[in-house]
Amino acid sequence: MALKKTSLIIGRQPLIEALQSGKAIDKILLQKNASGEVVHQIRSLSREHNIPIQLVPVEKLNGLTKANHQGVIAIVALVQYLDLQQVIDHVVSAGTVPFFLMLDGVTDVRNIGAIARTAVCCGAQAIIIPDKGVGALNEEAMKSSAGALEKIHICRVGSLLKAVDDLHLNGVAVYTSEMRADKNVYDLDYTIPCCVIMGDEGRGVQPYLAKAADAFFKIPMAAKFDSLNVSVATGMILYEGMKQRMDVKSVSK
Image (cartoon, rainbow, N blue to C red; front, side, top):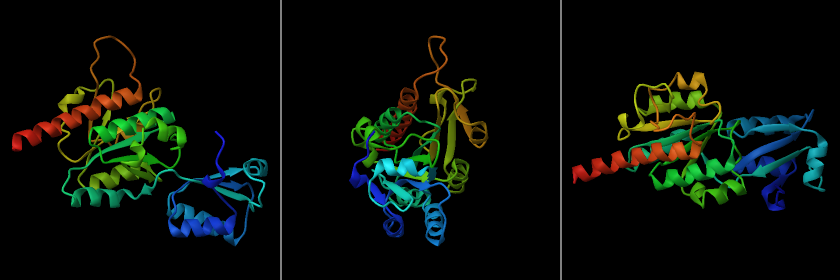
């Protein structure tokens, strides 16, 4: 996909100013073997803001702009990435119960867009994604989400495992799917603070991440079939969560 000039930050000083101002940046393209104090500062600021750096040959940068890029170009994010702890605090202070989604290795941007759309409809407040190994939240993802990616908190983290630890420290239970699980999706309690981890269709949730989960579930199927599309499966799970939460509200009235 061709990148619009307005979606690029070109040059070292403009990038530093953008990083210091907190501008949402999707990723930084840095020329291989680039060095110097300014490059060190860019690396430091990118780590601070969980912005991935991709090392590229100069030809890649030249193909994006004819301007003097000084060995670095940043791609502006179409969504504002938020700090996970701040989102948890915001959700709790608003008097709502955290209902989050974590994406592990979901690379198809159309799936991500569809997942965001369903998440908003089902009342999830946030989607947690890693800074690497996930589909870019680009214009195609925005289009697939029908604007939902602008209506839900997006938390980009350097480590999904650390994010699970942070969720646990805040009293948020973590669930994930497992085809051999004893419990079905509707057997778990989604009325409590919880986060559901969804993995890539082929690989599933990474073992080290699944090991950190509090409970496992499976989606029962009438036919013997290997798996569901990740966005469809996510929709089923989130709908069950929404249904349970709506039932609790109706009983409490």
